[in-house]
Length: 89
Image 1: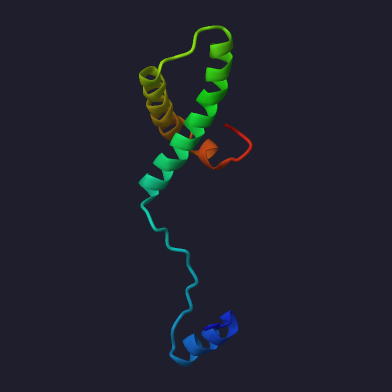
Image 2: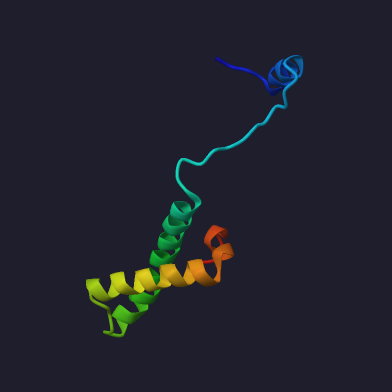
């Protein structure tokens, strides 16, 4: 069950076709962005939450969820590039 690109290219040429090598996502781009933004938002807020808990200002669970959702929307609306950058939270 292995095929090389070279053999696929030869088959495509023999059939007068163009070989297209593509990755097809399993979900929509919107879903991928939402998942990525949520992961980034959680990472950002975990750092803030730690500092706030040291200062006895920790948010409760409902407030934390609300802040995550607000940050998700902000990340998507303002800075989609940061979603894919591993170095920036």
